[in-house]
Amino acid sequence: MTGSATDDRRVALAVDVGGTKLEAALVRADGTVVDGTRSRRPTGPDATFDSLRTAIGEVVAHALAGRASEDELVGAGIGSAGPVDREQGAIVPVNMPGAHGFGLRDAVRSAAEAEHGAPVETVLAHDGGCLALAEARYGATRGAAASLSIVVSTGVGGGFVVDGRYLPGSSGNAGHLGQVHATPELTVEQVASGPASVAWARTQGWTGQQGEDLARDAKAGDAIARAAIERSARTVGAALADASTLVDLEVVAIGGGFSRVADDYIDLVQAALTESAQHDYSRRTRVVRSGLGDEGPLIGAAALVLR
Image (cartoon, rainbow, N blue to C red; front, side, top):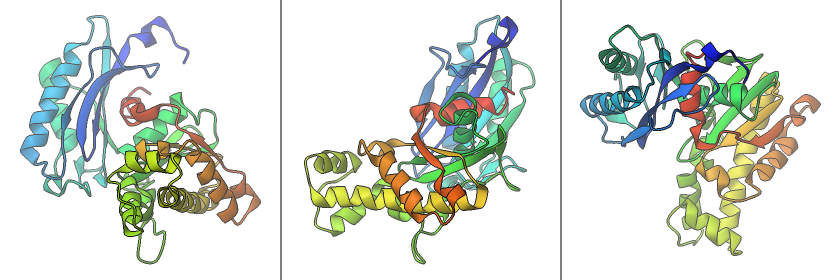
């Protein structure tokens, strides 16, 4: 990314809140994480307002302690598991019921201002949107007219970028691909996520416990493990075909731990998208691997304020 010497000293506080962890770091204008500023705390289904507030205070203090005197803090960007309430700055995460209604934006702002000693612009988005913005600015979808970036992991979700701009939707929740229905009874997430794929394989007689076991056994030739992986990829590809039909996507970037369950997972998704799409323009949509790996949501949170 090009920029002046002044641009190189701009940093943003990035906070990423998920169903298993909460982390923060400082990120530079070129999308790089500042060494020594990253830390994380566990979350989980038992997370509460108090536990989140404490964790935020700790990771924000750690991140801002690593800021050099010549760095300019331009603001704080937050990506969170959704849904989010962008207007109120609150979250309603599906996998953290005790955190429903938590004022995440104000909690991060208060922690940042306590450390910084001055007002800090603070912006909240859902984590899939942050991923999409990061991939469009620094990663695998740079230059695309319209893109979707998704994660396939414990959950499935994503976000859209069109003409270089992240599209939050009216409430800030555009891109929740995992809650689109794969069948009348089941959502994409309930079919294609890592835990769902493991659970399905076990109903077919497979005896492993987690996604890593699926990957190992499929590579060794286990037919059920391989079928679970193909079932996930086929479901994601069909959902992406629908998304591309609606939004006319040029490229889709896929990240997340379960997307690495097989070397050809991205190829399987591409094949399913191409087969399912009903029009030439949607069949032309390319599926690629995420360019930023698991750091996309954190980098994208910073990108919310690194304009």
